[in-house]
Length: 416
Image (cartoon, rainbow, N blue to C red):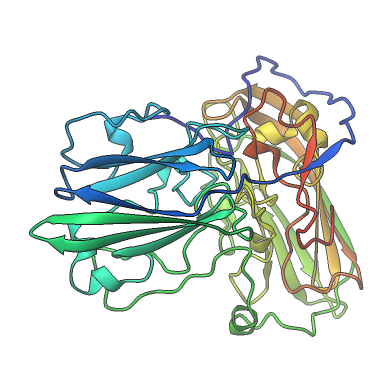
């Protein structure tokens, strides 16, 4: 099984000690997805489990930009997959993959996955079992017969239609959508049904899509507590007793490698900044150090909505490769990251990293000095940390992806 994704490194290095990164070029360039041709395709499936079909998506200039392939569990042929996906890379009774044919991004990545941190471990949006097309499951939002996938400047619609005696059509509609920025499938607003229990669709919050209802539900609207400045510096080392957490909610003590309490002017606990770590054979590896900022009474990670809308990665997740070479100086994704929210700025600095060969990335971290600093700021008015206009370099698969800063000039940002 291939280990691929935006968390992967661009190149393997053998350096085992801390790197001293040279100054990064100030050159910046805007990033744009190619505009697709609007079209509708009807693909005949003789049955869900034995079918095998492929399709192409072209740009307005007429070149093929994406290759797509769908196959059933018992399909015996070959789809001609340009990425070389193996049979075991397709899941369920039926699954579809989409790959980039040209451009700067990883051609081996299945673009229909919706989890950037570890896409190989994530089922794609088109994983389908026969039960998903029957009864209540057939009408379950975004996981039944009709699914909408927003990515790369387009909106794809997949519909299982004219189902009769096991045969059906897969109707794929391609439409330009300049608001669809994600390199992979944008997560849907409904949880994948578990064990085909489809009677009650469960809505979920999509990071980066902040609504007044979501803010109110978690009691995060203004006024915000007035906090006092504080900071902490600590060396993070290999600790195999740490239980890994994605920091989606407040961490237990045995999940922490770093903890900074933040008090208000009355001396009461207002927030907690904390980080976990994935510890591999040689150090902190794979999913790195996910960090979170939480209020004293709620499990919502206030940094989660700072997710980059292009890569779907968060600067609150610190990966070893991000601290190596040129990448260490890449704005907001290297050795210094700033989040502005709720009347203060949180600045995270990472110094003196010591590397070892990684199992999942090019590098693992044996140790790093982490500093977190909280400073009041009247300009920070958002209830949540917002995205930066700087796009994460891991989006690219070029030889030196950190050499140029790629930006979205239209991104909502308080810090570039």
